[in-house]
Length: 327
Length: 278
Image (tube, rainbow over all chains, first blue to last red; front, side):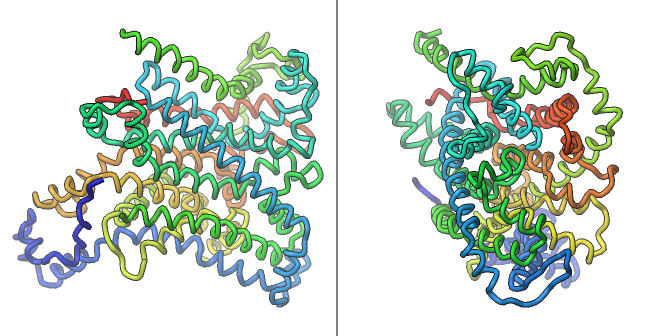
């Protein structure tokens, strides 16, 4: 694709010239020198100013919490017993000797892989479906994304009811079709998949909307030009839609990966990590150590390990996206 | 209608309806539960249609459990958090796609945005609690608006990157040559073009903040400050779950979001020009 050369960085513009050509430029030049200089300084650094509000919020919300976590993760910190002393890396050592933590990492990775892959595939398919101009689309789309709008609490409660072995809607359907009821949430082999299904139901609409927005912002003239050149529907999809959509698809993968990695509320509300430890996830482990047993230092260490895990997974990916973006 | 069009409709409509049906089945169950009397609900049965539909649960939730107040709190916090995210996030995304930054500041910024979103909320809760206390920040709404940026701001920045990139620079250069300042060009020319992206981000932001649970639970200590998810959580007690109010509350809570999505989708779905592809 043709790309224009890099947009001129504002600092290379001759400031006086830019100012004079502006409406009110004359008045600006009449202003006291200090005010004018401030205006120029502002314009020249505009890229930094634009980044400032968001950057400030990011730093404000993370620097202290992360530092705090790193600090207490090096200590034995029991909140209720008021114990606090330095232990060095012992929390981390203990963490990697704990079979449950390692199992939690494995479970979380399985959940992430299953949920992310199915959600992105399904969501992309649905977005293509909803991208076709059909009558009634404006009514069906909000209905299709409705699952995303329910509070997670309610979603979990509903699905626990639907999954119920004796009275649940799903098993009653199975029975009326003559099958044997399925122990959805109480069998270690399928409990995780059952939770993935709920996540799928709730968050596929997210991918759908994300990709649909991307599809809708592809300029029409590209398709018009291709059609004039006699391209078939599939060719247009392969050579126009897919390349222009690749950023949105990758972003969907990235965001779902990050969000599913934190999965907490669904597991907490539906299985509590069981049966056995079949659905134990890292977030649940941290929650239990920190808020049930009050081992805050240990929980801090676990959460730092978790952050590094996700970052390790996503940074490589995000870097590729970033490079592509800068082309 | 051409045969091709008929064929297309015959394939696509059943598919669409099936998708919507799968999405709506659990919600239909919720709706029927909210309309059933407790007696009928406990009686069980697969039937989705209540025998004696009653609005008693809605009445209870809205007027006896203070949901009107929770709705107000949630609406203020969620819309303010969304507005803040869209404002700061779009400025940042624009700057990141248009300028070069010294010292790889841009890459670091985006990476940091990911860091913000990857930290599990249960980890941030305690330090943020300490931080807000030390800053003498006591207004729960302000605290929640700030804390919710953890969810919404990284999402907005990353999402809008893709949309800003698609806008040809020539459009903006034309505005600059015509004498607009950069901020004017941004407001008049660039923003209208990224509307689908802004609309989608707004929907995501408002949904996440509307239903956020962890921070609301920690920071809202008195019922006057509760948001809807906290109000709903009170229906799940240690001994039993109040299914009727739970269902009614969940549906009431998602109605404004549905309304917002219907309103915003006009910016999401552009209704013109050639769209016959695929």
